[in-house]
Picture 1: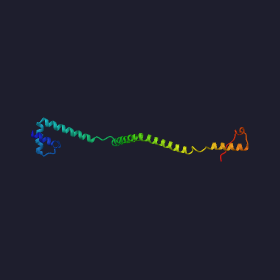
Picture 2 (picture 1 turned 135 degrees about the vertical axis):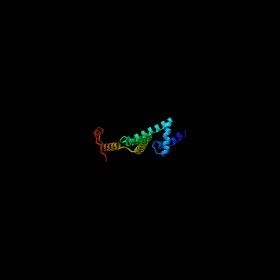
Picture 3 (picture 1 turned 30 degrees about the vertical axis):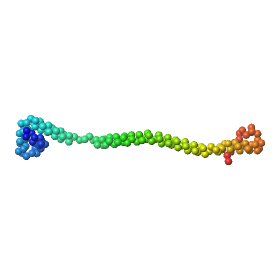
Picture 4 (picture 1 turned 120 degrees about the horizontal axis):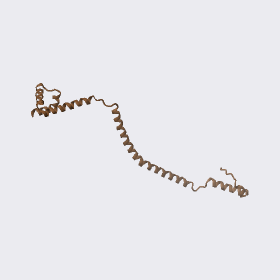
Length: 149
């Protein structure tokens, strides 16, 4: 039992043969006699072999680039979704405000000219006064060309 505890504390050094020769011989004898410790050492050696094999595996080409692109694309999607929510709310509000402003400006411009007479009605009045001054019958003025001043 005492040797089991000693082996558990020094299993890595035992497998690597990095112990004093006297202690190494003592643990060799214990592993030969104790089935549990022999199984633990065998498992530990298989894990070390597996780790050594994994070290020799080369990563796939451009793996880092693909991973970084995936991260960046997910970040961009989050930013776009945040801005699209803002755009879906703000854009209609801005359009509505613009239409309201245009209608208000149009109303004020139209009300400024509401009291004035149009150019056409002024031409009518001038034509009528000239015709009456010259005593021109009305049937002769059907094809009058209107001139502006």
